[in-house]
Image 1 (cartoon, rainbow, N blue to C red):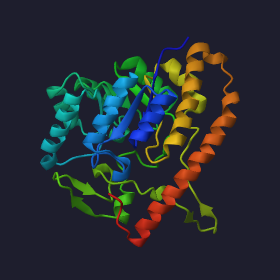
Image 2: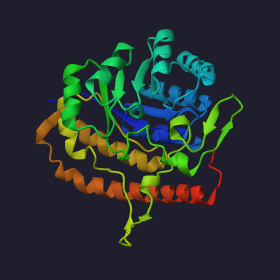
Image 3: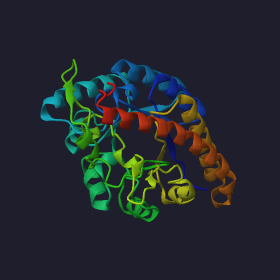
Length: 319
């Protein structure tokens, strides 16, 4: 029998959080507005985060708040003010990118879990040892890492490891891509004094998915780079045997119904793998995954086309 693992799902709205809890997710992650790698329409106000945290308590679930952008010195007081509120409300986990912010949180609120975002690009054992030394509890592995590399990390470093069940396959390391900034470099300050950079997901704006667009190649054929719904499917038994601690579903920008279906699918598969191990017929799940992939791709393609059209036409990003 394989060891247990947590299933983490997106919470782009209160409705989505309800859907993923009902579908069997163990935890939900939400983005603090202006502080995570999405536009404001998929992030939440502090009051909304508190409401979802209360809902999680009713379900016996957990909430992780993503503040996984890089902030300037002028924003650190704002950041710590948010963390203090979240701590008072009983939020248990944070997803962060900035090492200084991680150190500050663990110094002031050591009981709060700190998870290193994939955007920090922790890709080798020395990276993970460093983060463990400053007190972090879990590291989100970039999608570039292989099963073998993750297994080596789990064998040699005493830190939790989280992997994506599906993810954008970035052609640079996540958190180090500057393509969106070349297309839009604008910013504004909100009423709290937080600076929002529309053209930089690393500073609280949105990834415009430039690499996912329909670019014409020299041979005249259109090229379209899809993100991979099947990234971890065939490797799931290996991940569980390697001791992966958390499996993450992405998709704050999709509909709650679709995310609920995806969570149900993975909850069923993971539970069977934990019970039966290598005896599970993975092929039996494949047709359902293809169906979910087509539904997800249709929603993602519409969103990607809309975002890129707005970038080209100079339409202000929704905030």
